[in-house]
Image (cartoon, rainbow, N blue to C red; front, side, top):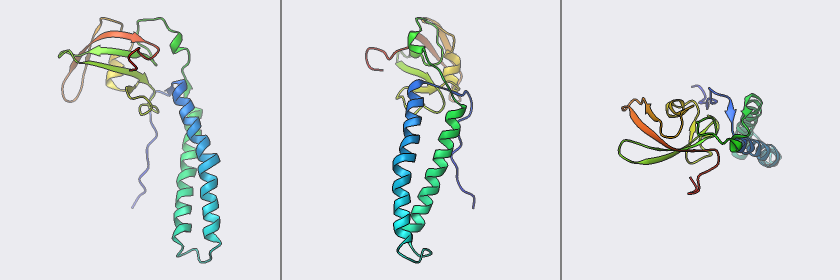
Length: 172
């Protein structure tokens, strides 16, 4: 009956400045807001007496362990990450970390991606990890290049339409 743990993202230890800010904000919120609130609840539940049958106390202690685990994880992970700055200053048509890319597949469907670190793929609606097959295929390519992405359900060919280091005008 082992505990289920979330595994930390492995791979390239890069993160965008936005991703780092989000992680630091989460860490600060956990440490300065959530943890003190849960500690207060545990102290109040403990004052009620018998702790062995006190559901609020037991739940509070469990919640406190979860918060502490997340605080340790975020602190350690932030120490391991390298913040990649200056992406917005690039004037290159080549694709590197932090790039926004518009591609078109063989059926004429356009898609937009932003290459980000594995810790922040959920931060951006179009974010893909730098370690993903799509990002690996796109790296160092430029506008008008055709890229073959090998996928389990079959290869797909993308034509690179646009590369930018700021979000596109249409909001993607």
